[in-house]
Image (cartoon, rainbow, N blue to C red; front, side, top):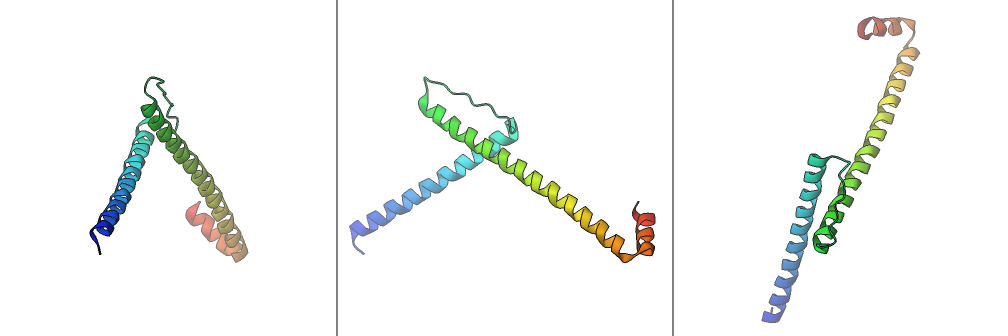
Length: 108
């Protein structure tokens, strides 16, 4: 391997490391804002500081994405829990009146 290939390889590895660190830092900022501010995190832009405004916009988008994912997960969980209860009720009914009476006397 020549010196120029080694330098190029090290450059690419350094770039990969920088991207990974940026993603980790961004993810940490998003989760920190979500945990402190909650899903209703308000976007605060400052026209005199455009770089900071872009950073805050990216964090706000991340917080909104997490809030939407949490809402969807909660809806899926509620649907699955209700379906599970319906299946359990159907199963007990199919066992006959004795099993149904035993179940109701034990759990209800």
